[in-house]
Length: 469
Image (tube, rainbow, N blue to C red; front, side, top):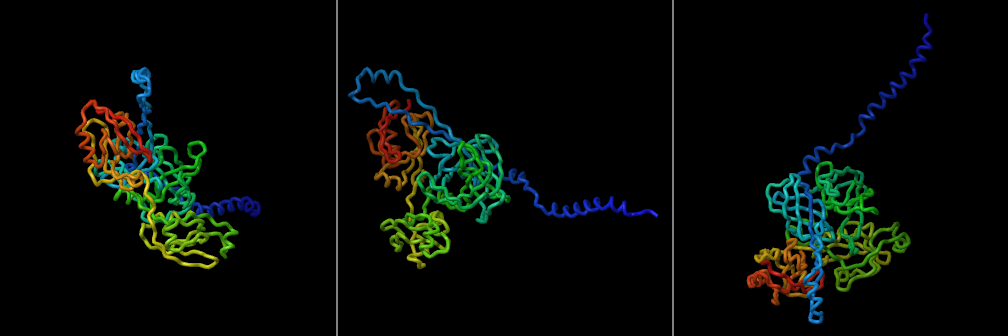
C-alpha cells in the first residue's frame, strides 16, 4: 500500500495557489475598468472649434507741427517707418446653438480686430463678437451658419472631486487634441489681474496648454461641465494644474451676453478678509469660517442694510460661507435688485439682516444692437455700432459710436483704430450716432486726409485717416 503523505505534501502548495487565484478572480472582476473615451470624442468633437485672431498694432503717430523744420518733415515723409505686422492669437471654443453661437474665453479674443473660427471639417468663418466678460473670462461669438453640431452644458451642478473629465482643444495649434484626467478640487479662488474673484474654478489635472483656452471640459456623459480657462505654470506649459469655469457660471454669463451683450452682477459694497483661528475664537466660533468685513462702502447695499466693519458674514442667500472668497462667488450670481438674507456674527451674537443686492459696474467688450451696424462704403475697412451707454457714461460723453471691427491693413487699421474704440469726431464733425457717421462718410471724397478723435481705455487720441481712392 502506497503512503499518501508525500503526494499530499506535493499537492498542498498547488491547491493553496489555486484557491488564492480563485479568490482573487471575483475581486479583479469587481474592480472598475478605466473609462473608454472614444464614443464621447466621436460625438462631441464636431462641435469644438479652433479660433485664430489678428490684432492690428497701433502704428506710431507721425505728427508734424509748425515747429519741426521742413527738412525733417520731408525726410520722414520720404522714408516712413515700417509698419509692424498684426499679432496672431490662438484658442479654442465650442458651438452651443445650431445657428452659430460659440463660447470661448475673453482673453482669447481680447483686443482682436479679426476673429476666425474653423470647424472640424475645415470650414472657416469670420466671427462677430456678441459680448465679452473679463471677470469670468468668457466671451460669446456668432458665425453666420445654420444646422451646426452643438454641445450641451451639464444641467446638474454635481461634479465631484475624483471624477473623470476630458478636454478637447488646439494646444499649440495642434487641432482637436484630446486630454483626460480627474477633478482635483472644486471652488478654487483665482483673483484676476484686477484682484476680482467671481468664479469658483474647477481644478483638474487634465493637460491644458496654450491654445486649449476656451475649449470644453466634459464629463463621462459628454456634457460640458466647464470652460477651460487657466493653467498654473512656471514654464509656459502644463505643470499638472488646470482650471475651468464651471458650467453653472458659464450658463448664467453666456445667457446674459446673448440677450444683452453685457453682464449684470450682484454687488454688496464691502471689503472682506479671511478668518484665522484666533479671530474665530474672538467671535465665539469653534473653527475659522465666514467673511470678515473690514470696510463698508458708504451708501452701498451693505451700508443701507446695516452691515458694519467688524461683522462676520457666515451665510448669504441660504448658502454657507466657509472662506471669504465664497462671498463674491455667491454675490456675483445674484441678480441686482434681489433681496437676500444675510446671517452674521456681531459681538459674539448671531444676527440676520435683509439686503437688497446692488449692481456691480459692467466691464468688458459688449455689443448693442439698438442701431444697425454700419459697414463703411468708402473703403475705410471700418464698421461701427451704437456705443454702450455705460461706456459713454464712464468717459463722461454724451455722444459717440463704438468701433465694432477693423479690417487688417485697411485705412482704419493704418490710422490705429481698434475694435472697442469710441469714435467721437471725424472730419471736424461730431459723430453722435451711426446714422450721423454714415452722413459724414457720404460727404468724404477719395484721397481725403481726415482727422479723427476717439477714446481708448479712457484716453482721447487724435489720428488721421486717408479715404481709399
